Image (tube, rainbow, N blue to C red; front, side, top):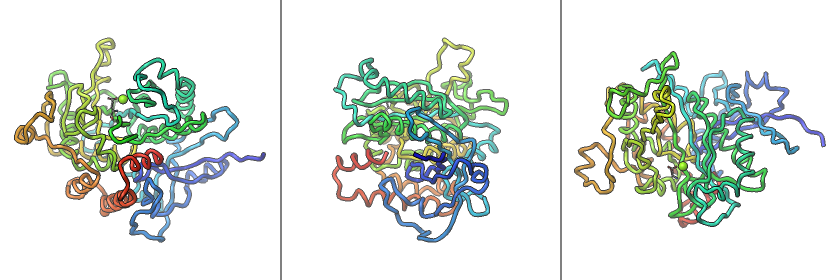
Length: 437
Ligand code: GLU
Ligand code: MG
């Protein structure tokens, strides 16, 4: 059969998907300049493929311009077409960023961080997912048997990630039946978000080529174990030196990292709609599920929204470089770009407000009284997507980080998603998200 090499350019959207178009690889140079045509209302295509209320209607034209720094080509060597993917920005016809482009929002948040502090951010996304076809019995958690059951998948996935330009770190059989986790090396923030979007696609593609289906849905079934996305962050100065660690400070958080953490925690209840944006995300973000339920800082505590991760003295020379903060209130229904943009904006806000890090919590927060929570500045995170969207819309500081109309458009998108779910029972809702992610 005749075939022609194609490149698919996609943009991370409000639904946490990449959406885009393909063009002949021979046209790469021209497409790097002029992109492909794009439609404003595409931003309102929900994860269920229905179009939420859109102020743009059928009107308008944009460009989707691929970024050569976000290119991945994976040839699986099985004779099938390679996955040649580029991630791009949505731009106006004059090439300026479109206000509602998630990737541009991340660039703008990172520019704010750099302007306020001279610092940049190094990031690693940790992803949990499950394989739908596997259906292994219970009792496989972290086991060699559970790993071996998917060893071919694991080996192919690690190779595919490496071919795609990522640096695979670990892969493991996670706790729940058929649940796995994959990590990659840290990278500068924008690159890390691009890699997170690519990793999800490469994982789905690898599973599909092996006759299986991978899903990153936040919750597989009601009451089941969650699939989280944990975002590890550390600050670097202009010379690339770590700026998060200061052994003289409480919990070893440098002043700037402490303020960054405090900002995230202060605005967490409003940004969680952007980092954990599915209806079922809020069945994962409950106490005692090793996810996140309060806006607390924790020292190596897997129930904290923001966890100060351990360092190892086995590599003492790199303790400052190892030291990082892990944001745990995220999942793969979120655009990795938009989630990180919101986290960074909140962190910089904390720096600009001169906040200092709260003390790390140690108690089981469900045992604290309302007064004790208030005194420690702790709030229960929203318990539904509706509530999360309300708290997002009600916070003028948070809405002010985004261009006019951005948060309203995002909320309309999510309302469209919620309308689709109306009347469905919890199992059907989980199944719908599983299919989508
Ligand atoms: N599955 C948990 C979550 O929903 C995380 C477990 C872990 O700490 O890796 O985030
Ligand atoms: Mg895990």
